Image 1 (cartoon, rainbow, N blue to C red):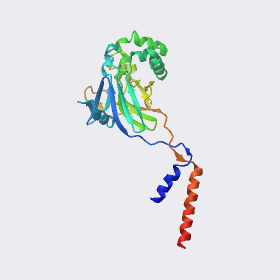
Image 2 (cartoon, rainbow, N blue to C red; image 1 turned 120 degrees about the vertical axis):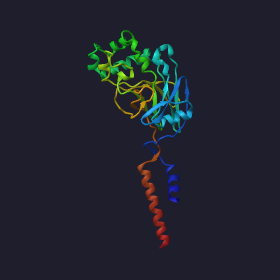
Image 3 (cartoon, rainbow, N blue to C red; image 1 turned 180 degrees about the horizontal axis):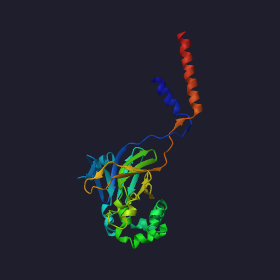
Image 4 (cartoon, helix red, strand yellow; image 1 turned 135 degrees about the vertical axis):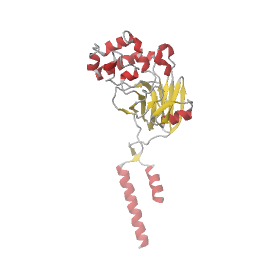
Length: 277
């Protein structure tokens, strides 16, 4: 124990280099707006919780459940209720937000349609879509009855963790884009969209920041969740993984300092040997 205490006191006074950070501990959560909590029921099912309080949210984030923001936006922009979930850790915080009409028309729509067109050019080409810009226009006109942007705007946060400035989280979603849009197999778009994947979209802000970034996936970094919503029997079957931010360096001694500690240790050992001789 004395050697450990001596090492700690010496290390505290030397110059440092960056090293991998350590995971933070979730200390609390807070929400605003329209928030629903889905809890793990067992047997491969999740279902709507009877509570949306902090304890229920923390339990959902630590299990197969999830926290949904702005559920009613699915039915149109008139139902939009901006909603947030903030997760506070010992080493920082991340705020998640629902996405609204202003986001989609303010640049997100162009970014997203260009992205999905790039990921699924052959499939969308088969529908007569020749560019992301054309898809953006179609979603607001000929495809407006599908509420594409609205159905992508109520993210379900399935888990979140912190690593001293870097945050990892998952969104619970659907196995296919067709399922996410709740298409019937008889829908003319079903054969194509059932071969595509798209997570819901979440915006986020790190460590008390005032600006938003967006996170979404077209199937990359996703996996089968192993659960399904007991209410509709098709939601939450796939989780989409994201990592954002940059971990802050942890102070550790430089190699020269470590050599100095080793030399000190050698001197102490030699002194003990002389004393015992």
